[in-house]
Length: 110
Image (cartoon, rainbow, N blue to C red; front, side):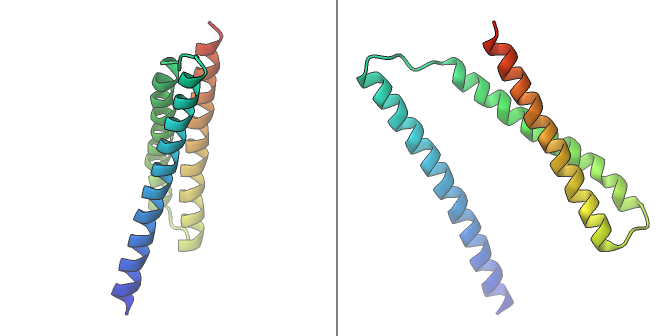
């Protein structure tokens, strides 16, 4: 029974990820199609900045994951260690998001 629940959970997670990616891609396609129909030219700099945004966020999450290993070496209760680990990962991920926002603002300020 537990294996069925694990398989169903994994299937739902993957299905959710596929659905989100599909919605984002479809929205982007329809947006570009509408801009072309109105005679506007879609910008190419947005694509470059999307990769910078994703890179900064993933970098922040990675640094948070590395920094959270400090808490695994401490003698803490399991709940406290989990709280500190997830908190560290989220704080560094938010730092990556702020860095991405700062870079986007700096790029558009030119």
